[in-house]
Length: 124
Image (cartoon, rainbow, N blue to C red):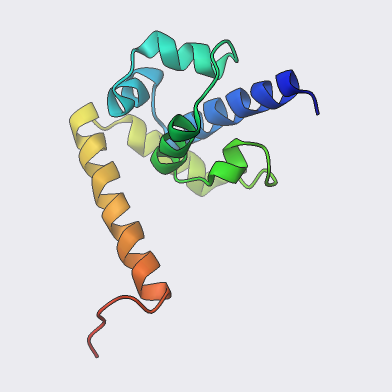
């Protein structure tokens, strides 16, 4: 795969992950403290993404960096009814509510990761 093909694959996966997450380019730009046209340039393959930006996109969209970088198979199925329902519901939220929800989900993921690795303080 050429360097250009890899960059276009990353751009396409970022765009797909954003759409499936139910976020607009403007919402993603606000979360990442970027301008909306920057997100558009990234998604069209006209702007390279740094490693740290790729990590932030992966965190926001709850996908792996490997997926966004094209190093793992496509795990998202846009026709999944649950995914479509979640995207519709997320699109109804205000930007503030969506940001709050994203922060809450990050806490749940962190707690889940700690519990699954044995690092959590579970009470029985």
